[in-house]
Length: 166
Image 1 (cartoon, rainbow, N blue to C red):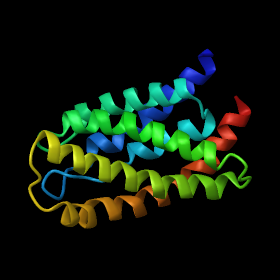
Image 2: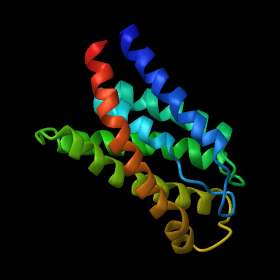
Image 3: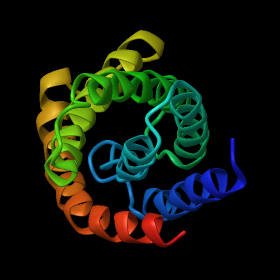
């Protein structure tokens, strides 16, 4: 990997970990995962297997370290790696789709739903959910979809311009 690429990916992860660390868990320790937006941006910029692995592991480690959900460390880690490869698959499927802005928003919606679903499923495997899957999905995942899509709408054009200048 080129140094420029690694620096940009590390920059995105660094930006993403700040809100994940600062935002408190508001619903039984769950909180919207805005770090996903940075992972999705990295995959949009560099849609390849190595990047998916690197971003999945890096994002997984950082979110596991900063989670407020009880027993959320392992589910956070594994969910990020799995989600990164799902997003890579979607990016390959949507490769011919020319509107990168709309593609970024679509990937954010799909990716956040996949991420939240995988996380809740893994928590059910590794531990127990404090409420039903559906109630946690509605209370945390759906608002995270809205929040992440709004964040992507703002950040994507900035990152695109920044990437062109580097």
